[in-house]
Image (cartoon, rainbow, N blue to C red; front, side, top):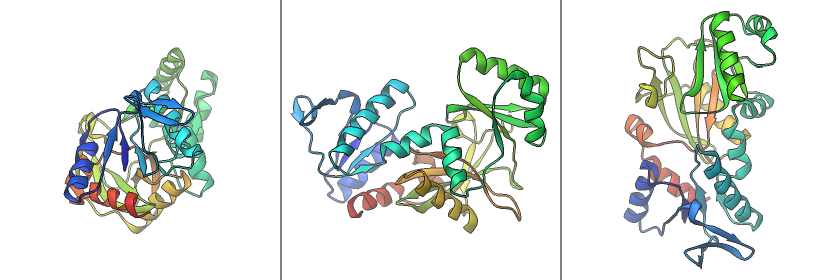
Length: 285
């Protein structure tokens, strides 16, 4: 198996540990160091055996993401086994595109509107059931680019901020479940493999651990698991995480899909060996 990753993160270390413990041949490759030739891809002047399973970790940096996509697409066209697909990762990297795909599959999400013109802000807030709202960049990452909007004054400021950056964004209704946390579900091979809860810091509304959020063991409800499994299949992803808000007596709301999920906190919180489950899927699929 080939594991393409731009850095030696926790996921890579754990996968290497599990592969070694189970005598599974695993080659870790930095996709930024790969050269593409008509006959195949080379690393240090030697062709890489891509006939085995090839898994690609994503990157938040555009130029690295472009190279990863180029290598992945090249191998896909040659018929090699890829996890996750270039199409699936492209969908998940764009929050607005993800919304369109999920809504077309019947997934319930918070209401949202594209930014449009500044003159439309009052109408947008009314459409989204008033304040508070949330602004989201199309290409946010780990909570960055997500801004809480309590009123029209802040909404106008946020509009000006994103307009100056020339970054596409949208407004979304702010939804808070009956419990003050977000449910994260790790899916492998279209099935839920682990679930955990992500609770925001007392001075923030974002539940991401990099923003001060805390994680703990939690068993997601049946409807939330179903929504997560439908979401990853709709996005054509083999290995992904889905963030969900569970609401009492209502359909769970999917917030986003991540095509390159971290597993450190998920393994610690859920007590599941996600690296082993992932490797088993790669080798048996």
